[in-house]
Image 1 (tube, rainbow, N blue to C red):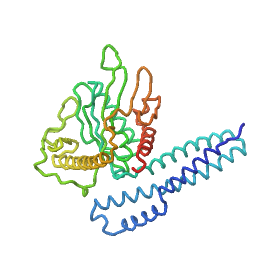
Image 2: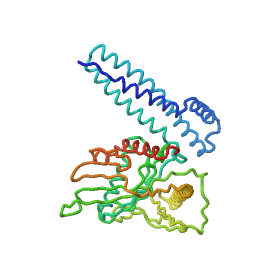
Image 3: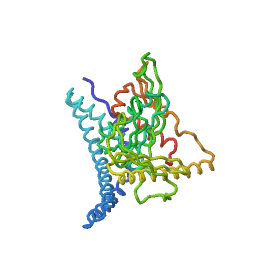
Image 4: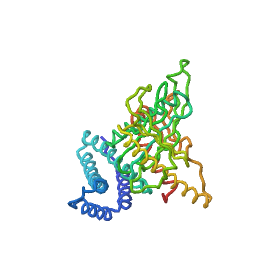
Length: 370
């Protein structure tokens, strides 16, 4: 049996690893961990639960990043030994094991490399994602629900806490809109590349003639800001409406007017919350998301002003960025990165990492300073 010849691939992986270590800045990371460990050891740490949670979360993330960097170096060394052993013994089983491990190490390296690109102002924050059905009638509403399920599955596969904060159901099938929070480090930086217009092409299950139908859904991703990073919202700038929470088909799931809708009058921004049991809880959650959206809007306006002064305005927000084609062929393709797969069902089941990684790299290539 022929020897395994992975020299070029191992060399490329080691080159990428050196770049990752340089970007991560391991000595600075070690210093940061030491500082956080010192803060976490303070006896009265949990007298302020919010501050304590922030410290412990930052410490956990930094320790996890350090562990990944250290373990990956060890896996590269072990992989070279495994390849040498497979070739020396000419053992088919060991060669298969080495081939599998090479693929696993490459995936781990890609994941770590992508994480080093998440250095934007809000990238480390949790994310609030809103999906809205667009053109396409009942198919669009069904597509919006398919996207919601896709992101829920993706979060479950990674162990990321996801909370659906609000859902507006369509009359026949699917949803008009849904808002959910992913509360994990770098959720915003990771999911922000999902923002934009998504397109579905399929044989409509809602069309008796069985015609092919194109439908659209919009995905909005914003960072969830810390409560201390707030923007002042005068009371006379908002309108608060209360109503009863409802589930599919309009069936009442609450006997009190606990759901809350807040409208920011100057911008027309609307936030609805109905997942909590009390009106007070829903109002607090809605205000937090509203503040996050207004902060992001303010940031975008400032960035747009700078781009206008520099003469580099690009109208990219809302442009179609991904197509999901189920008929006449099977394909999901990102139109920005040209990344594509021929298994739409796997994508709808949450297999998004390839698209997200390609999107993050594409974004960095568009603006290296970001």
